[in-house]
Image (cartoon, rainbow, N blue to C red):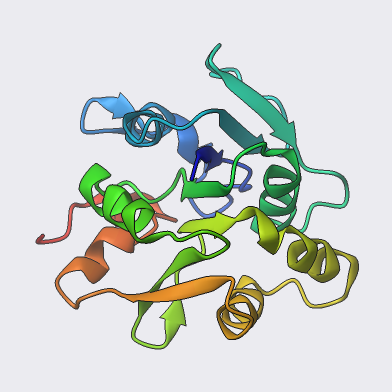
Length: 191
């Protein structure tokens, strides 16, 4: 199996008040921190999914812009899955600063041919720090062309179809998957 990776950085950051990707967290902008995690997984190719071209775009990543009208992460994931030449896509959102490289490595090690890995926290899926097989692409296209843009529903459907396996996140590790939406969310949880 071979992996590509995508950093999802297309959010509007309304509640944060500025672009989340450029927020400095532990002495580095979030985009740089998250890209380091992805690079350490040694993907064949790295993509940046965004609504507009970011000023921080690194030279080793390919930019994937959402097709208007953007449907949030669904748009970015659909475009990324249609762009990969590998068997799987590693997905990480820019606004999940507590995730660790070890956690993402663990997910990638669980991937199987034709089947990715979906973290579940209780009964809620975490589709923005997951591994998708290339075979999931038609399901994303169908969802994007429909009227239901819910990644929760889509990811649970992919589990039922055998395209994703569930990875139950322990209560201790659940904090790693927390996203930040306001400045107060940047306070490190007790890990």
